[in-house]
Image (cartoon, rainbow, N blue to C red; front, side, top):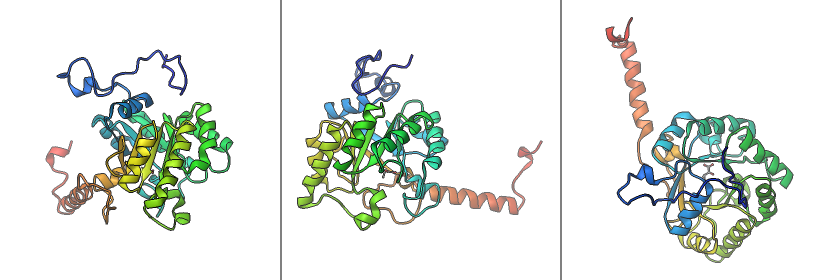
Length: 297
Ligand code: KIV
């Protein structure tokens, strides 16, 4: 039977696997790492001062590859809205659109913790609505946890979800679903505004959020939030002090193209690679180079 991971449960049959430590310091990294990343491993990283990596994933192959690469957390982000569905922002994507993506990612990753974004409009109305949507993501989407955007205002919502057995990551700072009320993509928590983010983070962590994600927050503010809360923090454009870092995979791997935000580090040029491959294939077909005799029966 799968051991319980319900927050507060004492009935777990699984011993917390040491995170980043193991049978011997020369053991292969793969042996030292837990077979399945659980929330308590992220907490262990915070407690031990080690780091974890998180990437978005929206379908089978990216999930398989990132999982094999050892990425600890895969986020089925509502950024699928503008990275899969062709929308301009994250706002239009729906629960029914995200659920199949989440299921595909969860089925394809063997080790990573799968976190699903609750899309705009699917949790704001009431704690009951949030619990109902969260249940769908764990039950139908096979996610292990969900992420919601918001301030201390959502503390009661987080509490209700956690009570219902839904682990919650809370996303503060710049929250893309509030793009219009925040006046566009703007850094949050500068100067005197830092205390607001610390208060939000404390309220959400107290309510039971297992992690606080900060987006587009000055590094010193993010460090202050990280120091104030006991749970692991994750940053995107929030400096280096957070326990984890997250990037949208199509930015990280250069699939999207165009201008990247300052906080993105591009590790590959997948767009260029695919463009060249598709152009070469098209040319081969047009010139009769493909298929060759070796591809024919
Ligand atoms: O949906 C998403 O990709 C996100 C990240 C920006 C953290 O929420």
